[in-house]
Length: 312
Image (cartoon, rainbow, N blue to C red):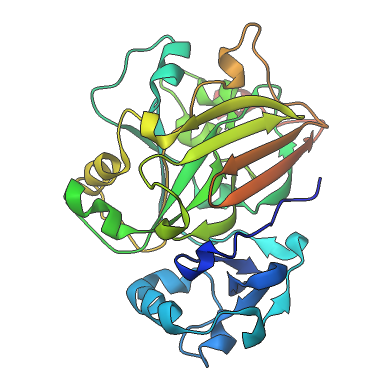
């Protein structure tokens, strides 16, 4: 499937879509082209897509006055060359049961406070990716992912959006058997296999989305819509999530926060439905774009962690 990289150029005057083209920071320009930030800024900002978050305010100020049109030295965009837009976050947080209908389908009560877990950065992969299935219980979870643009500890809810650089599309792929293994849940391990954190294709600044508090998201499996909703439905809003997490951990520039998934995951269907080799998953966030994963069989012989633990 060809990824949809159509850009609404009318909105680029107000906002910005930026990404990672073969390891270099680029900004979307007209006619499907991109502008290389290091070249356009005469070296003021380096080529590393991750480094821009450490100088986020300066980057936004420069971009607001810079000529980022196609005539400013842009290059054609080959979608196959777009990589992870945030390739090296130091921390990746995620939220469980943050949509009421998802909590209901899981037969669990709405949480009283955000349920936070982590995904390890090695699971991140770009927008157009092939993912090997490590078992027979891999599930999908489309999410809006926040990209942190400013360090903060103990951030007040009213200041939370000021700490967000932008949003991107994400999938919190989950090996349910590993996640539920043992007497204590193994969320971080079950959700961190290679390729289990696809994000992209761009990071969209907040003025690229029509309503930052009600961002539509959806997911299709082999052309069938399996999830859909808007972040307005979340139990804990973005300001509440940032205030809660930063009340414990210091949020760092370039960190990621997966904000939770709507109802419609495979494990809660009757009968349960999991990803199989040959499946294609398309996830969308309005104002950002879409990501596509194609699934293939993993190694024929998987390492049984439980057996290893017994032999240790």
